[in-house]
Length: 188
Ligand SMILES: [Cu+2]
Image 1 (cartoon, rainbow, N blue to C red):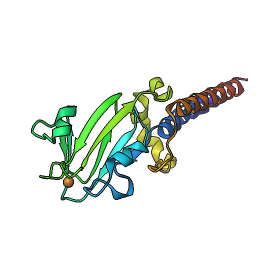
Image 2: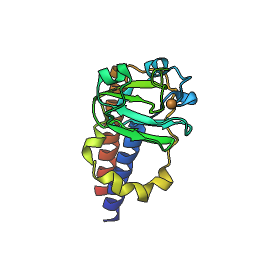
Image 3: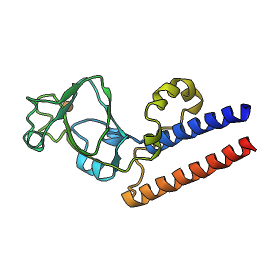
Image 4: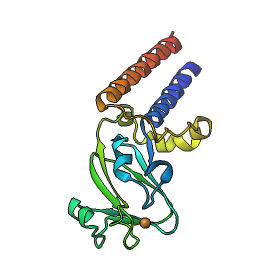
């Protein structure tokens, strides 16, 4: 019965790795970070945001992060009714569903100086996250020390959605094939 245990563990590890590999972290503004001098339009044009990805806002105490609820608030730099305000200097925002989100800085004048960013998240997440959304948080503390993958590069070249979702399906297929083989081996 040891074989079964190993197979189950392998499956869980594979699922976890798949999830890690598919979810990207985007450091907003790249190496320049969250600052008035950063060109956020050109930064976003080089990024693909997918459900499950995370935004990381890195900035000095001069700034903050304010999420706005509408395109018009974003256009007019109206921060009077924010959805949320963050100020740790290293804020992580999870893109948990498809759609457009608006962020700006809460410091007076910074929004009108261009310190704002509009993030459009696309669906097309890995099938693996549908398998065990409740398992990963449970497993992470157990497995993450040995599994600390390098963070995905934020300056990765633009990949078309089609190509990347095709490769995701391919990787998933390889996973399933590998798992089937290991199940067969452990049962025989
Ligand atoms: Cu600012």
